[in-house]
Figure: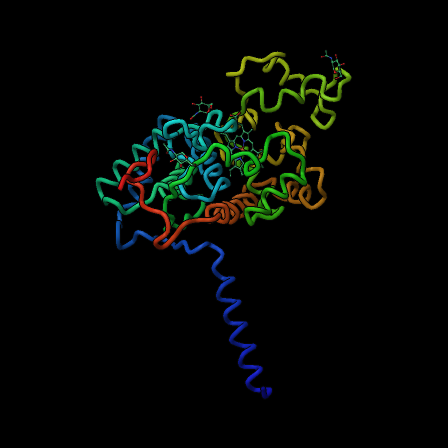
Length: 328
Ligand code: HEM
Ligand SMILES: *[C@@H]1O[C@H](CO)[C@@H](O)[C@H](O)[C@H]1NC(C)=O
Ligand SMILES: *[C@@H]1O[C@H](CO)[C@@H](O)[C@H](O)[C@H]1NC(C)=O
Ligand SMILES: *[C@@H]1O[C@H](CO)[C@@H](O)[C@H](O)[C@H]1NC(C)=O
């Protein structure tokens, strides 16, 4: 082979590699429904905003459902499927506690189907509605959502363990699970900032409050005064229905306070505190303590999360109802 030919092949290979790498959004597009259902995105937003007006916790609910959908078998709407017969679906698995907002997704999907039958996937409805519910107080979209996802037909409770980190996870476990989803340490820290909204049940952190090391003590990595406050909210044994705000006094407000609380050793879960146990991660926590720093980074990482193992093109289906796969 002469040198010129060799260069040409090298160049073509390079172009191919660059072209493939540019496509890290899994084949999703901005405004995928522009031609097929031009009103889709506005319809989802209008319905979501009217629901968010009466339920200020909707943003936290839907953002968590979107995260659970994406981490278990990709953002394919499988979290929305109900169990069939004796087959337990993802929403039956242990971490589903308080997963909520499914009724809102149903309402949106019903109206979208009326406007554009068989066109807009449940996975896209969820991804858009999560963004819109969080964005409601700001009256503008807080991040871009690419669309074109299609719906999967498999949802198994047994797929959840190992794909969703537990709140007791240490740093290396968290980093490992995120890396399997194509998310790096920066994404892990940034996305943990979602805990700036929402609540948690006592059982997800109360082991940190009582006899943590077997000496009748609390987790030494948890601020002692804050541990005391949490013990008063979650007595031992706690009522399993009791919840506390993850970002005290600010759990309805999507802001950067989460990173302040983590810095002060007041991160609620062991998995939140674990972010300070790695030098690189701790540095990111420190850098995200303002909305100006956090919001653009969150926009980037949540977009990456929304592209995990998506089905596009002719894969999967457009489910007519989000709770059941299409019959026939
Ligand atoms: C880093 C690993 C993560 C762990 C271990 C974790 C764990 C948890 C746990 C245990 C709860 C409380 C559930 C309850 O008791 O009701 C929770 C709530 C929540 N999580 Fe995470 N989470 C993680 C990452 C994420 C990510 C990446 C997002 C979204 C981008 C997210 C969004 C939320 C939201 C919004 C809530 C509040 C839900 C509500 O108030 O209804 N989490 N998380
Ligand atoms: C339950 O799951 C099994 C395999 O995962 C499948 O073969 C079967 O058809 C499912 N049953 C129902 C009622 O969907
Ligand atoms: C979560 O799982 C429990 C236990 O399997 C089940 O009783 C509950 O209905 C599930 N929650 C949702 C929202 O599906
Ligand atoms: C605390 O843990 C230690 C070691 O596991 C155990 O011996 C002790 O009885 C526990 N104390 C309480 C009050 O549960």
